Length: 212
Image (cartoon, rainbow, N blue to C red; front, side, top):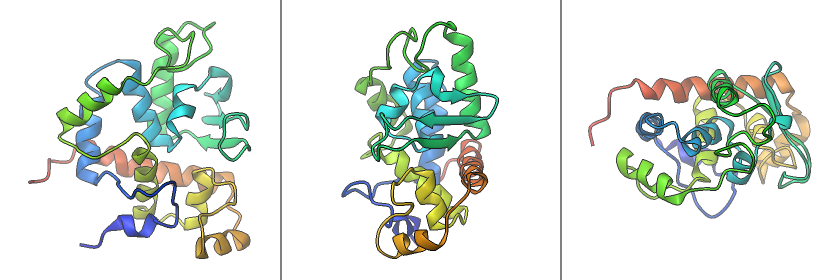
């Protein structure tokens, strides 16, 4: 069939185009959920939020509004030097709620092992997850591109995807940038985009494994 990745190349982050297929997403999540290590929680959170690895590993409770289901990455941490508001889908919210039950209230970091420092990215754990899921050629940044692909598959408009990913110009490049001039997505549209993608992602976990 048609390659959905081709429809996402208007949101370039680097010269890669690797995304997880729906079957790979299911395998990836099934393996990631077998351990309670904070990195396993963090990489799932990265997939559901599309946030950059550094923003996830350094996420602080002061940035998370559990009641409002919102994560605000401050401008000081954002690549575009502007606050990024990421609505938390039900699964993303569950992940941080699980961490809240684990981390003492006086510790600032969401995913740090003790909550006292940001989470150090343990490449051996990442490599083991990919190995056990039988996935190759994927980097943590590809999770961001995978979320964008899921939004495309959920028929989310390009300008909404751009805002969801925190692009400073409101869209990607070329024609998508022009679209962004005429369409200024609101927060609720962005929330619906995250929730639609999350439904697609969660649906892969219980799907039977594709024949390879």
